[in-house]
Image (cartoon, rainbow, N blue to C red; front, side):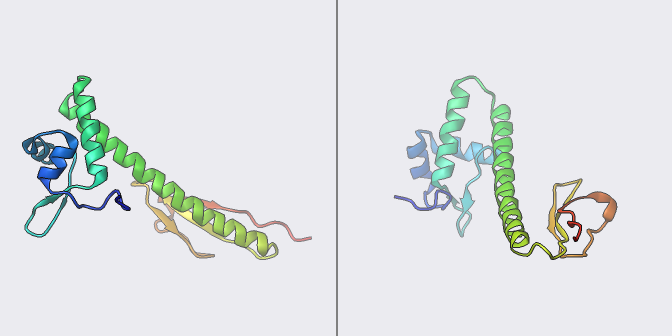
Length: 149
């Protein structure tokens, strides 16, 4: 059993057999950017279990009549969605930690949690009182200070 589904462990012949494809098909998919395996020293391709699952999905889409360019775009978008989900999980964890800290210190003034750039989606953690650079290109999320009684 493989613990890390992204571990590059299969050589192309084994990956082709597991995906029920010809090794040349895997090379073509790599050239087209559809499924790009890791490279071992000497530039040899190494496929992960995740890559094998992607190859099976490519095969399914192809059998349903989706063009290779369409498949490439679908895979690209799925990778972007996965990256965005990971970023959301990371930010939610940071926000939860800050919220827990704020709850345990209700009388302290709290600054910004993070800033998100309008272009590229860059997320930058900011210390209290720190401003993003450049200011005009960022969206900031913060918790307003509660009025003191």
